[in-house]
Image 1 (cartoon, rainbow, N blue to C red):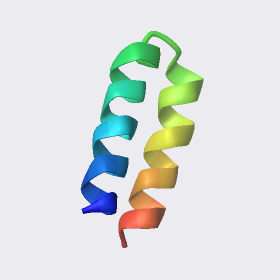
Image 2: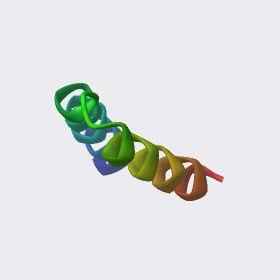
Image 3: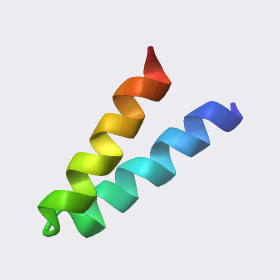
Image 4: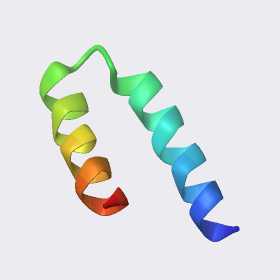
Length: 36
């Protein structure tokens, strides 16, 4: 349940900061690495 909330927060953060390519790329790599 906590994991779902975490994913939701990350999704919101990505939507808010998607205007910063470097930030999004860094977080995308983090999510991909964290998800596997």
